[in-house]
Amino acid sequence: MNVYTAILSAPVRLLSVILVMTYIQIGQAGDYDGDRAYQFLVDQTNFGPRAPGSAGHAACLEYLVQKLENADAVVSRQPFMHYDSETGQTITMTNIIGSFYPDKLNRIMLCAHWDTRPFADQDRIGNRNKPILGANDGASGVAALLELALYLRLKEPPVGIDIIFFDGEDSGKEGDLDSYCLGSRYFTQNNPGIYPRFAILLDMIGDAQLQIAKEGYSLHYAPDLVERVWKAAENTGTYSFLQETGHPVFDDHVVLNEAGIPAIDIIDFEYPDATHRYWHTLEDTADKCSPGSLQAVGNVLVEFLYNLEP
Ligand code: ZN
Image 1 (cartoon, helix red, strand yellow):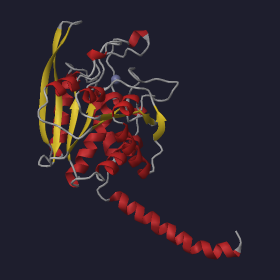
Image 2 (cartoon, protein in one colour):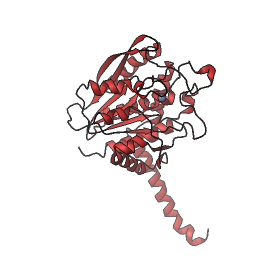
Image 3 (cartoon, helix red, strand yellow):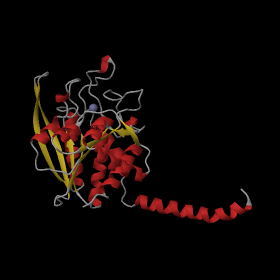
Image 4 (cartoon, helix red, strand yellow):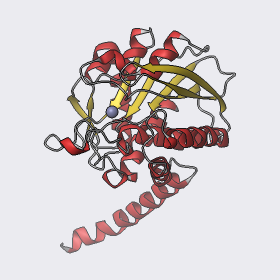
């Protein structure tokens, strides 16, 4: 450094200190809290596997209802029965609906599945009949939305919002798509009066190595919505939303789209990366997820939702 730049750099340094302080202050005022979102993820995994019919599933149902009520949502349960032809059992499943600002007519749906897969069929042979913990595949999307619920309670958004936790997304048999997404199918066939402009589904967004490509079905059904959400992501400065097309992943958003609700899936299917796979294995545990990833997605949701037209 020569004398000339030293003289110039003093005010520049001061300015950058002020900017950093301003940024921190803005960042603290009732903000979306990725650490708390991560705690909601851990809370769910502490119930154990949440496959429909299990004790963990029953306990987690009450937990989720309570969390939404704590955020002042109008909460309702949509129970339904599912007959599993393979086991001969009938299991009760429940969609959970939390409505925020129910008087607003202009509404958006945010959703995730809260059930976990009953069998780790992508694991090694000895583990394939065991239920997964679903830290990422299940709990992460729910956790991000529980934290958003607290944010919505404190700061009124320009639109009404319905958060829906679908049950029975992940009980399907490999190769039989009709056996997946039971909750969203039941919801669309027995709609309790929720007609959003569009829906955003969150699934597998907790991966500590978060890299979210634009999911194939989302680009097919609702390309404009994908671009608007990715634009919001760009505004937040995150590097986790990629300008790439990802795999098409059959998920609840396909069911919503087929029922006439434009819907996209924010999903990082490569968990943790293109060469390793925790998906549908016993390795899908909370330590593979991170508060920073939930924070990144939460920031994008806040940026997107609070800039919508009323
Ligand atoms: Zn799954």
